[in-house]
Length: 603
Ligand code: ADP
Ligand code: MG
Ligand code: ZN
Image (cartoon, rainbow, N blue to C red; front, side, top):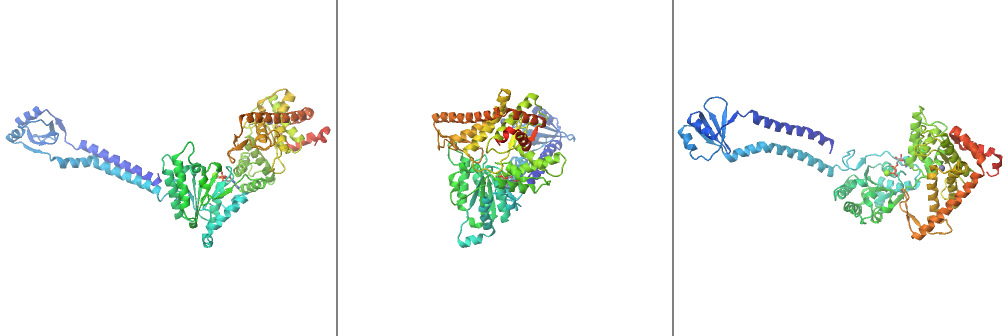
């Protein structure tokens, strides 16, 4: 409901209520006082000449007495054939009510007014609903419709860092919106729609807005889930409306976010009438409308594999634009875009932050910069220093510091050795990413400490050796626990989980085991979300896979164990230092390591 309507409904209902109240009160107050008497009492009064006049209505007899008081008597009607004769004989004035007319008037008074008022209310209500379904759907700034419209997005391609390939494919759409006639003249048809595909937070929505901003046309966005309502048919009518109005407002961009909500493959085991109908409507509208009018439909999804194939057919979303996770240079560019909005100190090293955040998407990086700014404010500084940025990277990896969690000296020692175990294995294996930081300050996400490694270059490929090295580093923590404390703690839970996943993928997806060779035993189901996999093999094979995974893990465990056993002395040294300082840098760590002469030749 819109605001105007809400404002109207209150005074109208107040008027209605007060009119009804006035009618009730007046019907009581203005009537003369009436006293009910018996029929025999009435006859008696006739004989005693106490009655001046009588009025016989449909349900009672109203009696006006001769004394001039305001009093009236009433009595019920009896079958009395002699009454008229009696009244004439006693010279009493009498009359009867004219039934139909009178009851109509009173009926009007009692029911007519409220019905008229209710009618007025309905009128407003329907007018409102009607305006929502027709004129109002794509109007600017009204939030009663599900479509969000902006005349100018104010976003340009400069705001979207990295994603150069995606931008390249979108430039054509921008040019087209600037000058459709050039394309029409030559007979070229532009794609009616483009589908932006990629993991969440990579900037799909931002890119769509940038297209509108660059082309300087209005931007209308609706989320796929907004099409679907409780009632079958609502979604389809919304789609129809959307296209009708997009054509009216052309040139413009219509952006359907999370299109998988409507675009799921039709049919299926759990068919959904409403969604199927909505999708059918969308498909037929996309066929029906003429792209030369200058309407471009952009849509975004992170689950392209669930979309109905009919949506991707040429003539619909025939252009797919992949919006990938940014690589090192992309991350650096994104950081630069966002760092522009905050005040920074001179020691900022964005290259380092970009290197430390492999796998992070644009939204993460924007968040890192913002967290850093918040941290600066918290400590009362009015600009960001490098430490703020580094800390916020760690917050995203491991959660906030939890300084009030006090570990017992034994636990603290255990955590220190565990982390040094990881770091030591990392430092002593060839090809491992350098250790950047070791800390035993507990974090809110459950980590009691962690070792941060930062690769020098972005890796696009991982070799079998790289993966084995990673697994060995994961094993390092548990090995240290076993060698130094002869125990096994729950601290290694996530190490075990991650290394098992790596080993499993080596066997089932990367073809890195001699036992199975290049056979795909598992498939990734949703590439852009959690990357869940489905098994693709018989049960016997699954059992064999487990054996192979176990042997990979055990092999790595044994070689980590060897490294730890051979370096107990140096571990003591580093762990001691770590327990004192709680956080040590990669350089401090390497200095201690190198000071041990016996180790130098290994490095
Ligand atoms: P998606 O729609 O892909 O889930 P969004 O476009 O909503 O992601 O991105 C969320 C936020 O992340 C944006 O508002 C922006 O601040 C930031 N962001 C994402 N990608 C980029 C990028 N390539 N350049 C700059 N900022 C980005
Ligand atoms: Mg989005
Ligand atoms: Zn660990």
